[in-house]
Amino acid sequence: MIIIIIIIIIIIIIIIIIIIIITITFIIIIIIIIMSMPWSYHATAVEHVAAASAAAVVVVVLVVVVVVVVLVVVVVVVVVVVAVKVVEVSAAAAVVVVVVVVVVVVVVVVVVVVVVIVVEVVVVVVVVAVVVVVVVVVVVVVVVVVVVVVVVVVVIVVVVLVVAVINSSNSSSSRSGCSSSSSSSSSSGSSSTNSISCSINIIIIIIFLVVVLVEAVVAVVVVIVVVVVVVVVVVVVVVVV
View 1: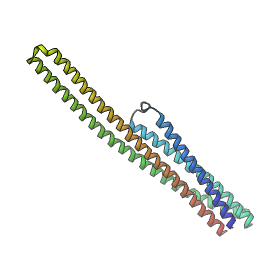
View 2: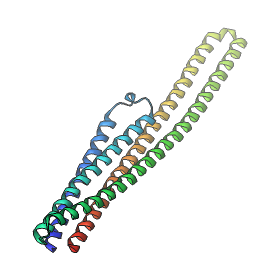
View 3: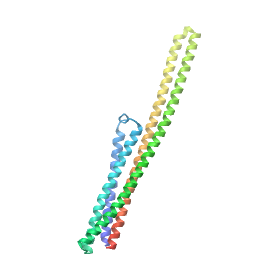
View 4: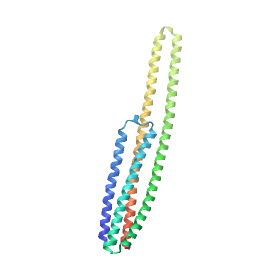
């Protein structure tokens, strides 16, 4: 009995390691693919984060499905071997035990998957809400910057026109100075807008990385929970039988 339990635990630990490696690899691949794509490929920042979150959700669900299938197969094989070879029960009794174990595992898995989906939805909603708030704040800042630039340009134009009226001999040079001032002010406003755009991109990249990290943690936690439940079920079945 002890040897069988040890073998089962070793097999499940190996499965955990493999699944974690696969999960991390998938997430890294998704990060590389999405982050290597130009921002012009995405209509909005919200769509960018939503697409990344959806991809991470798909990875988590696939990992859960793979873990469930593998562990159910392991449980069924172990239960059948223990019931028929070690305890020497009848085939009918072995089938009953297998059915009971499979039902228990499926119920647990359904509960875990529902919890995972709820967590994922909450994470995506929170991320989208944060992005919306960031976008609103940035829009307000951009509007303020534009208004300030327009006011500065208008003031400069008015001053230049006044100087031109007072000193008509220097009107052309004054207008030239106005043009350069206006263009310098416009370029200053454009620089501020570019700086804000860069800040938006950095914020969204940080949010995306946080989402992916949360998804990775959720995937690992789900794997560990499912494995622990299956180990408990197998040990109980072995002890009872």
